[in-house]
Amino acid sequence: MTFYDIDKERFPRDQLVVRSEGNAPIIYFVSQKVRDLLQFDDRGRIRVINTGTRFFHSHKYKDTRCLYRPTFESLPVLRPFMGPTRKITINLEDLKILLREKDPLLTSFRDSLLSRFMTLENGGIAFEIEGNIFNGPALISGWRARSSVHALVATNDLAVMKLFLL
Image 1 (tube, rainbow, N blue to C red):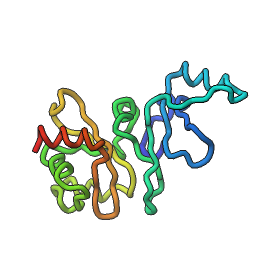
Image 2 (cartoon, rainbow, N blue to C red; image 1 turned 180 degrees about the vertical axis):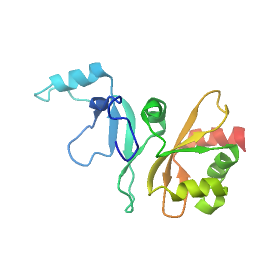
Image 3 (cartoon, one colour; image 1 turned 135 degrees about the horizontal axis):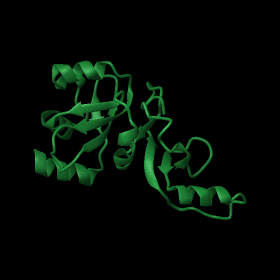
Image 4 (cartoon, rainbow, N blue to C red; image 1 turned 90 degrees about the vertical axis):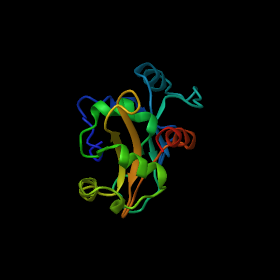
């Protein structure tokens, strides 16, 4: 929670669940009612196939303190609880760079954004897009690597964004 500057007092972290013990690849966010039901099942009689929203996904990268990144679908829920530390504001031109190139180098971006990237350690980030491009606040999950960044968007969503913005 501290890596993503998430407000521990307000965020309902008791609603985060994993499907199995140990190194779970995905952390889900469930409603309080589902959480209560899962806690009530102390004998393991309920078999859960899929529930909740994928919230954090493991990201195989050696040089990071946090191996989980926020998922694209978690950002609308996570946004009000997330501080400015891992939230990066980008403009339309920056977004176009992210859409055109798979792993754009940090130096591909304007100087002020490059300076902002340099203050961050490697790991998950949320790109917050300036303006009203998508008829409301828009966030995209991303990853800051040693010398590049990339957007973590589903292939079909990426294709639609490219169609409308490039």
